[in-house]
Image (cartoon, rainbow, N blue to C red; front, top):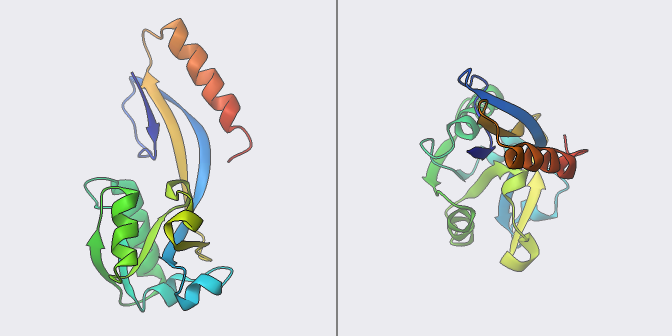
Length: 156
């Protein structure tokens, strides 16, 4: 068994893991939004708008990091909606419900979708890992993990 994703810091001792790539916190807005023309946007700027992200139950590490970063940046902010997949987030953004906050690795072809994705200037990063059962490691799994690590090299 192998899992690839944003994993918690503490994992069971029965699992091995490697870091694959990192991503920044990214704002998702409609291309018509004034923020879309900016090179980057701050959490303080975004906090003045209704916000959208993944549900905590779906991505607790991402949700908690976004919540902590917003709490550090501003006194007040409002999460108005969540969606469990990127298409749902885009749908909510495009319908005018608010701006979304997601890891940059979640963004899919923004020019096709009519959205703009811009980095959040505050220092919020996520590390994507591959994790697998330590024993017994099948030769195919070992080879696959090595290939995955090689493909992702330079993305940290």
